[in-house]
Structures are given as C-alpha cells and as structure tokens.
Image (tube, rainbow, N blue to C red; front, side):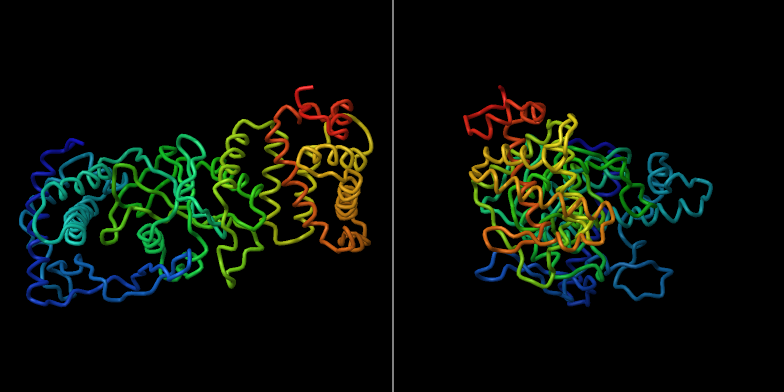
Length: 472
C-alpha cells in the first residue's frame, strides 16, 4: 500500500524513531513506566477448552513516558521534545483533510483545531512507536514502522472505513477451528490474543470472566460494512449493521444445537486501517453490547455446555445457506425460534414458538387451526424420522392448546403447561421448541414443501412415508 501523504510520513518518521529511542533509553535507565489500568491477560487453563483471564497491573504503557510541558504530571519526556513534533503539528493543522478528521467538522474554533492537531500528532507518533516496541523491540525496523503508520494514515484520511464483523458465540463450541458458512462468512476459533483484545477494548467495569470463558468461537463476516470515525468523536459511527446475517447464523445454530446460545458482544476488525491498539494485540475492538443470547444460559455454570462435531457444524453451514434464500414463512419461523430464546417470560416464549410452527404449517386454507397443525406437523416430521405420527399430532395439539389459552386470556392456562409423553412430564414450551427446530430442518432441506403445505395429497404421501414428496 503506497503512502497517501508523503509529507506526513516524512515528518512522522523521524518523530516515531526518536520516540522509540527515548522508550529504549527509559528501559535501559530503569525509569518507572506506568502500566495499563487493569490490563487483562488471557490464559488457557490446562485440560479445558475455554480461556480465562487474569489482571496484570505491570503491563507497560510506553506512551505514559511522555507528557505536555505545561502539564503538572511528571514524565521523563515531553511531546514537544520529540524530534520534529512541532513541525508535524504545524503541518497537520494546515491540511484541510486532517482539519475535518481531527475537528469532526467543528472548524469554528481555531483553538480547538490547534489542540486537536497536537493530540492527533501525539497519537500518531506514540501509537506507532509503542506498537513497534511491543511487536519488534527497540531496534528500528522501518518496514514495520511504515506498515503501522499506513494503517493509522488510512484512519486519518477519513471517509468510509471497511471493517470485518466479529461476534463471539455464547455457550456452544465446535470441534473444528473454522466452519465456512458462505464466501464472506465463517465461524472461527477465537485465539487467546483475540480474546485479550476484545476484553481490553471494554471498560474495566464491563469485563467479567464469563465474557471470555463462555466463548470459544466467533462469527466473522468479512467486507460487509464500513464505519466513519472522526478523531473528535472518540469511536466509530455505523452507517448500517448486518443484523440479518448475524441472526441468520444464530438461527441456523439454534436449529442444530439443543443447548442455549446467542451473542452479547459485537466487535469489529479494521480492514486495512487502525485507530490505535493495545500493545501488539490484533485489532479486535468492542463495538457494542447486544444481549441477544438465550436467557437459559447461566453465567454461573460451566460453559460452553455443548461442543458440535464436524458433522453438526456442516449442518449449521447448510442451514445458514438455506435460510439465506428461504421462503418468507420459513424465515419468519426461524426468527421466532430465535426470539423465543430471548424472552424472559415463558408465556411470551410459547407464543413465539407457536407463531413459528403456525408459519410453517398453517398455510392459507381455512379450517380448524389446531387440527391442521397436528396433522401437517405429524406428516412433515415423518421426514425427520418421527414414526409415531398420531403421538406427534397429539403433542402439537397440546402445545397449541396451551398457547391458545394464554393468548385468549383463559385463567386455566396453567393446567395446559405440562405435557405428558410416554409417562413423563415435560413443559409444553420445551416440546414446542423441539418441534419447531425439527420442522424447520425439514422445511429447509426441502424448500418446495412450504408452498405445498395446503396440498392434501402431499400430506397423505408424507403420512404414508412414500419417499420425497416436496416436488410432487
């Protein structure tokens, strides 16, 4: 990648090199270097699949060796004492491109612009020098310094900055290191360094051990969106966010995995640019909290509670691709399955699940809804290996009866909450979730079936178990 602003690089390079030399001198002389505040260090526990983190208060922050001459803080070196710092500030202040970036459009104040030019120049020099010290040591490597500078320069140039989405998946792990869902979307093992970066980018009070140990893999979506990030704004500004892609992956995972899952942290990885870093870590940066995880996930218990095999991971990938172009009713049912897991109230959960079942089996013809759902559900589930169609039909009817009592305000709904099956008692909500997951799998494997659900001949053929009938 060529340098976009040769003048900026020619001024920044000697300043970066001088700052690095001062950092090395401070180390040689044993000067006190303040550390990062509560710096998390991720460590893998022996014999376990998930990491944990400890707090290191000694991780050096080389940037803290420098301060302003006018500041009361005592620092070994000043920003103004860095070689070429004043000339760099003057150049930055004179350029309209950087004026917009540093001032965020607030050009009415020349004092503000001058102050932001100083802060910006300081940030540019010390971020590159500190990263060099952590990743390459103190012996000057111009190739590495230039590569780091180019990432910062791309940020400074402003405009739309491309990012990759990085969403850790809660409570469900995978045997495979990577599962490709599409050309641009995959589920990937989170490295210890990525864990550390995403935790560090949180405020100290937002960090907890569950945020690390409950996650082993992340959903990664590449080249999907861009952000804008003027220096003065302090963080990225989203133009849009691909919730549909993220939720589609969670929906596919929820269909395959019986254990609760979801996500509560959304991160991004700058693609070809940099806004700064912590030590030599990858640029996995916390964007926002989402709290879109199954409420049955417990932060107090062992987690992840399930690890999917390669075969199951392949099923997730197949379902993700099928959901991409699924019939609207099938997409609705998958969304309702996901929404049900987010509900705090069981009554809301059963309504969501039954809406999903009805979206798949209700069709458009008139008739007794409970009867239709029972017969059609039993017929469809023959495709999933369910042999006792009468029992399945009765289960669906009992689940729907529970839902009907709730939505119609019947005070006796509590009596319908428990469903007996083969002498055992189950929550109607749990039965509904199993039924919806299994029906979704059939509908996604046989996409033509949803459009023929009103065809009695198709239903009879399914009941007779006479082979593939979706094309009949």
